[in-house]
Length: 294
Image (cartoon, rainbow, N blue to C red; front, side):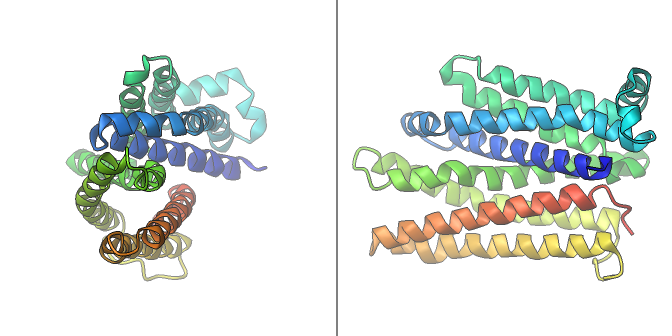
């Protein structure tokens, strides 16, 4: 595997892991009633731990991959001096240090008392997402515009991760809605998800538009540009996710009172579809985020 492909794969696995962990744990920590959150956490703890491990391994492997790209191939990735120079003398290395700290925090969060693990994991993954702004197209700018772009990048990934990751615990919550002992808490969690979700989706779209203006200063209409082509596909997929979210909220949710089993099944399938599309979007960003924005 060539270094560029390896780094793209690491970026995808790392970024997807952070977004899923951030959204899932923030939702369980702040919007889901404690008793229900404990039940869902016990159902999800092992998959979330595996996601954290994948994210940590991806950031670990990304350093030699980035070193190979900056240097002269995989041989430089094994050279201690070259790795040291990349780690301490480049923005890539500085960003990697911040992301490595966040990855360590994620793993250590599982050592916290059970009542604090969700919040610890949300904090660690949120820090990791914020650290993504240290590299990328914002680094091409200068002065206040660079800081504004970085702030918008942080806002975009946190809101996007909040939307995507919250769908993961939402699926078992929809199942628990049919249990009499969980019905009240699950209904409250669903209503809170819906209320906050309106704002989250809107903010993802607005911050995405701001990013496009900051980078391209126009719509991605040049199909001869690989960057603009992939960006346009991303925009279309996010629009598809937003449409699915609208259908879930305004078509399937009202069905719950009339035909609960079919409505809940439709909501679960719709949520799974949103997660799949969101993961594809992260994959696209992992690729075109390394391209020249022309």
